Length: 421
Ligand SMILES: *Cc1c(COP(=O)(O)O)cnc(C)c1O
Image 1: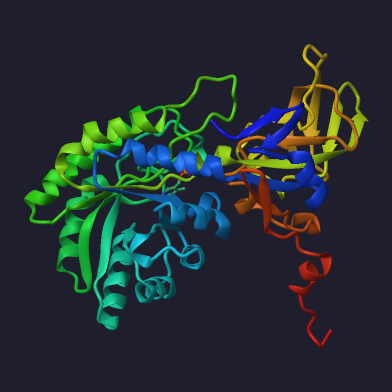
Image 2: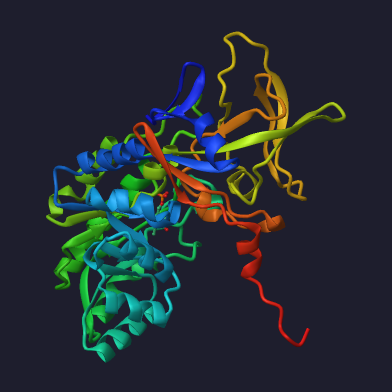
């Protein structure tokens, strides 16, 4: 459920009309709903209410400081995959003891800065990384809390670019090798082994891969405890999918996911961490765009928008589907026609949808891409020198711009021309 609904024929974010936001900030822009972010976070809190836990929001899905502040104030931890994201978590007021550092290639500099600023745990993805953390922590005279990310070799049955739990993926330590690497971790100075980490992929629409992976983690927990390790925390990653296509079957609910966790690892007495991103932020955001032209092609009609692949790359990068709806509600029973919905960027890949049935819309009309709150603004670029688009946060009957659209001057000022030119 989200808080983007029609009221008096106009799409609203909570109690604010999308048309009003468009008039104020111009298009294209992202709009997020505070109530939806809150609700989705609380669903995970409820799903894990049976145990000691921390829900760490995966910042990479939506890293705006206002979004992080909102979630952090609700008690969320943060899952970061770069020191830049770490700085964002801190700037949003989240203390180091609620920040988990994931990612396959943490640099020595990133490790040192996180140790300095305080960190809940590093999710370690390789032996060389483990050794680097040991050296840096001992050099600083501190102890680094770590979990090893294991690769359970489970097929997440999701898009190949976001599946991470198969042995051929670059992520984690093969689970069969885990006991050896844990033994090494226990011997290394400056390392405190606190738990096990696993993350098998994103946009999972079936609970079975989670069940398989978590069962393997439970077995590993028992084996490691036999080996003398004090495994007290399990980080089960993120990955629960959302319904991009509303007509399709709904993916599992957080409460059902929580039951899988309880069933598989619930009897181990471990603190549970999860790292959801998409399920919290995805349906909490829309991308709003204006129609520039309606172009009659050779047997096709093109709806040309002022948003493009640089603003929302998911369709061209993953072939992802987004519902695209008119901001002014179509009249009931109105005839729809198939259109290719495209942006102005000079690439054929700049196509949001092909042959999509749309009610009549024309130049100047607003359309909204649903489910654009995750992996939307964060993946945007300024390709074609299109300035990054603004982000807006709605709460109840008011809204605020939480990232300004840069002026052309600001965009150009990031370049510099050497004096010898
Ligand atoms: C991407 C990622 C997540 C979040 O995945 P979602 O599908 O957005 O829930 C969590 N943990 C790690 C390590 C990730 O790489």
